[in-house]
Amino acid sequence: MKSIAVAVLLLFAVACSNETPPEQPPVEQQPAEQVAAKPDASGEPDYARIELAAPQATAEERASCEAVGGTILPSGKLQWENCVQIFADAGKACAGEADCIGECRYEAEGEHVPDTEVIGTCQTTDARFGCRTVVEGGKIAHTLCVD
Image (cartoon, rainbow, N blue to C red; front, side, top):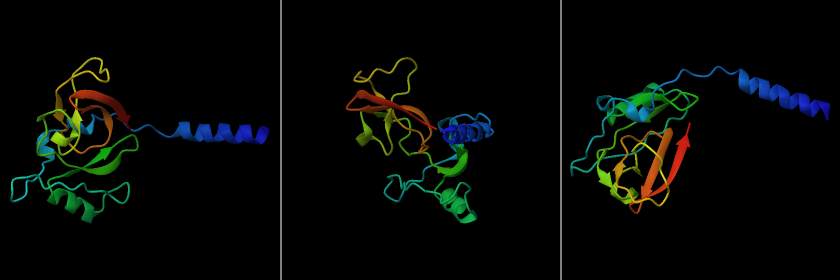
């Protein structure tokens, strides 16, 4: 029994000893000129999420990201690199996900109570980290935080 307690304490100590990465502003707040979505020939956004295979982008992944107007940025608690792209409909008013390339979000200050009727805004980028309140059917659906 003592060895289990010691093992748990050691695991906890190791987990707590990792250096915390410096605070950085959420990716959603990066200046728009750093990342841009490119429309295709029809004028519709030509969006495809670019996934990286490891915590650091390879030269090939970096080139693929930049080719579609994305920017490699460190994200989340671990600060792993991600290709972040701005959606062509960023900031457009919406009532739900069907109105946007990404999510329809409610970004006003204050309490976000589920089922409250609101007008949402199409999310700015495809960044996965940070807190967001999702709008569906013209109402607040839920709030989610990912780090």
